[in-house]
Image (cartoon, rainbow, N blue to C red; front, side):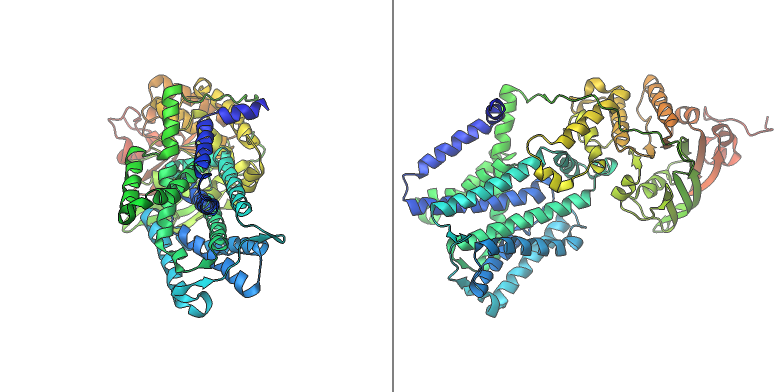
Length: 602
């Protein structure tokens, strides 16, 4: 009971509860059927907005197909009622299923797109459905639509008036609980990283494509449900349910209410439905006043109504402190010395970008427990090689074999799941997330349950607690144990480099590729990093390190390869490579401190 009281008192929940109570008290004196109709419409649009929060708020994909899914649900419910005499017990699941199946079909091509291309593709889908609804007169009634759809009936009980309104709000509560549960879970952290920095998501091994797919389906299912409820509520359906106006309302609900927030969708729905009614006395200027209100809301509440309330609370009362008690767990690293099979085997890998040869017939093997250095002048193909190994770039020829499995052309998430982790030349972290959560999110690939496990968990998710506990152990090992509650963006550059390494190790990899790990580090920081890497080597972890700091790399590496114009010009021990004439000519040069004269030279 005490925990429940504290939950209600936390954050801005208490003010929201009082605001909701005041709004309901304001509407009670109104004529009952009118107030019920308005509150039912608010609930339907809140459900539509909560669905859109999954794809737009969580996944960060600007979909313009939410109105189309709403229309699909509406037409399916109407046709099932009129032609087959189905009740709500069947029409609601049918509407959800139809919207989800349609979303699954269109997801394959459209989810490959990004930014405005994705938005335009989804808008095109919505417009095609609108044309079909108008043109298929025999099925949809054309521009006139279909009428005579009975009210919602479930298990032989007609849900009209207060009961119908309460049922719709109960569905809003369940959908809102699902969104709330996902936001506060390990999956929610993964969505946050995917939305903020796709490269950070790749480095963390997050299956971004799969998350966007599930978010797209969830948004479609809830939109289809909202469309079916709308039809049963008003008794008619017409092409207006597929009109772009529905999509605009949905977008306004989420942006003005607050992105990725359940309460934001509800607050936005109240505004969109009730504000035009409040301005009814203005008659012809009603829409103008409503537009001015929305513009003011966007200008003065750029983070949405709920987001602004949360920001004000944090400013006045301080941010909520992390209070979760974390048990001491062993870091997820394991000994990899049980087999001598190479972790990485590149066989005659080539890659061209137009007329530029980035890699040409590159062949090399990296066994377990070896630190393999990669050097060469700028443009020699080092970063391309790392990108080929990790799946960001598909080679034109050759094979990439990881731990005995051919991973050529596989997606980065698949390569990460096979035991390959990486860092980038430029640090890619989520600057607003804590140091702890930047590492914990990388544990998502090794923890079971997925989306359904998250939805079925009640309260604080165990997987998130475990991931954070393991993250603490990794951060302690890299000297960041005292910084777990700081935001990643507030760390100095050297600590951010170690944080990237900690995130890579959280994947429990067999091989780590480090791109310029010593860049920007002081001498003591380089020494500390080298010591940590040697410890990881004793565990059997294979490492490929790309770095221009030859003093750091050549003291650390067991073997080194030098690339020049996409070709391996030398490979061997650090001393052999630094004396190789081809390496001296292509990269090191006599003036470099790492230069050693060739054998026999004076």
